[in-house]
Length: 77
Picture 1 (spheres, rainbow, N blue to C red):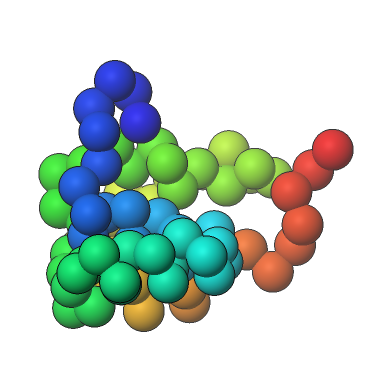
Picture 2 (cartoon, rainbow, N blue to C red):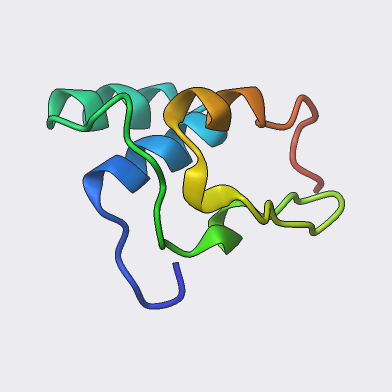
């Protein structure tokens, strides 16, 4: 994430967006807040592999919004 580490809540949101079950479980076990907002982290971690777009409102994303915004398509080769 551009040289800046993600905090635990941001890690949870990224794991949700990537549909990474192990990452979600680990973040929750470590105490991540399920109602957290992504905040001022690097929004480019949410770059769509197909359109290369990034969400402009990523700072307001919660884990639920991240899951809802996950791509239904597999990553390109």
